[in-house]
Amino acid sequence: MGSAPATGISGFSGVGSFSEAIGEDETNYQYVDNLSIIHGKHNFKIGFQIMREKYFEITDFGGVPSFGFTGQFTGASNRLADFLLGNPFSATTSVGNSAQNMVTNYYGGYLADNWRLTSKLTLNLGLRYEFSASPRETSGRAEFFDTATGKEVVDTACDSRSSMRNTTTSRRALD
Image (tube, rainbow, N blue to C red; front, side, top):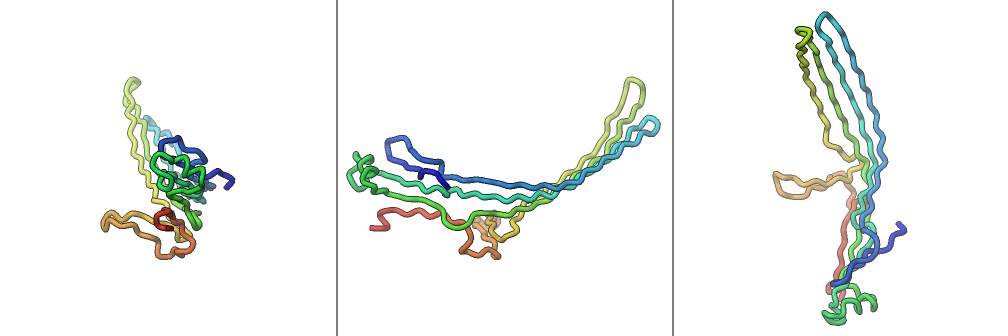
């Protein structure tokens, strides 16, 4: 990635790169058509739009590692000493592939009539409907929160070796 790890030393300002990498490559296909018809005192308009959105997204929220120094190893007042000695209390990073191939569809349509009742009064009447479907992941790497069960649900088509996982390691656990 070419970024410096984020480093936090208790009592000091942090240094390093923001530990988040987000990128997206989007391709949209759309069809739009509109029609206007003037008949007497009416100006009728009708139209619709169909759009297919495809985007490849990378969301490595821990893609750049981060280290935390608390003074655990050299005494509470020596947080900087832990950093200088290279003894982090915690290290956080993400492993795996977070790339997602997302697709969604959008549909919209309208009907309108500008009805000129008199030279000083025109009624503008119309109706519009839009529907945008929730994006879905085509490679089986999606996770979502199920409000009915209160649990995180992982796409069953997802290979657990290829999904993104956030890993935090504490020095206490290593010693």
